[in-house]
Amino acid sequence: MNVIEKIKKQIKDNVILIYMKGTPTSPSCGFSAQSVQVLAECGEKFAYVDILTHLDIRRELPRYANWPTFPQLWVDGKLIGGCSIMLEMFQNGELQKLIRNTKKKYENQLK
Image 1 (spheres, helix red, strand yellow):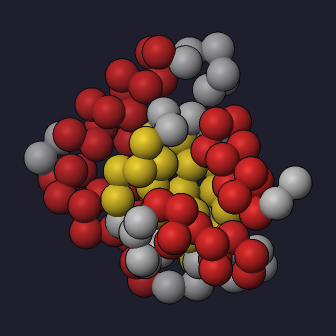
Image 2 (image 1 turned 180 degrees about the vertical axis):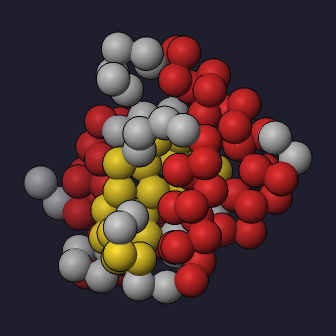
């Protein structure tokens, strides 16, 4: 499986997925830390990929997504954006609504 196929599979297999630096319990940059905190506040489980330990994904994902920075939040197969977009969406309630509606859509997969 090549890197792009691996990325596509990760996005398909994980309804809520964040590509980040570090892990949710030990983020390696402030943007990743803020993003994980916002996602945790939404109250649903999410998957993550540490791009610092997956250099192939770190190299290829920006080209695939047409988004140059990390973290990257993907929900239901769609790129939502990075930290700034997540924070803005959280502040106006859009992120919570998106996560809640996605949970309802995929209720069995997110348990």
